[in-house]
Picture: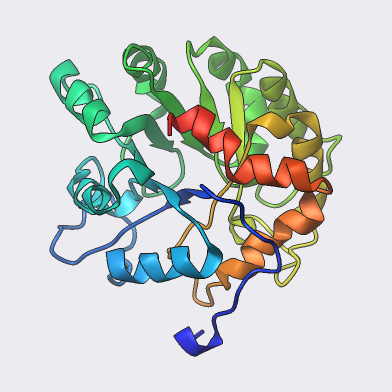
Length: 278
């Protein structure tokens, strides 16, 4: 899709609207040995065009798997957005408390665990790192195949702080809402400490665009269960997608997934403000 094809959303984003999950890429930063892909450059000016088009003011910049545990690319980009940016970065047991403190002062509010091929950190350190970053007011951001939630439920319930689950739980492929794995995510939401990003349906959908209709029942049920802890994200620039969707279409999915405009507005503004401390 060329820039000329880009369109505006049918959904009106209120002031202080926030995109809670996107990535920057720049070839001057080296690809990590663990990475499975190195997407083309996607940098600050290009993302600002997206913000302007969708009327977004705030952004949460997430460390992609491409750079492993080296957060330099995302941190450099964060500087350009000042107080309107927060970060979710990767840290492991070699990361010092001094570094965690420095990252906190730079606006980082979460530690990322990407538990799919190409991720840079193992399950074995998740509990230890969750406890450490909790001391700095961070949460754990988790991306995994949601079908594996049953085997991880007890561990996830033990985490001391907040848990943010990516991409509608990323059930690959989608599951009915009475599936045992989906019920685990609902139970995590019941704890009051779990948040879910209503984002990137293409990562798990089998029905495909434009509606990703097989994801809708999951998204609607999650938004019904805990509307105050739902988030929206673009997942720009859609790493690994040969035919990336228009972000306006992704934003408009909220019109189908969430019936109440007041709730949609909170998903775009109040909910991220609370979680990320804007």
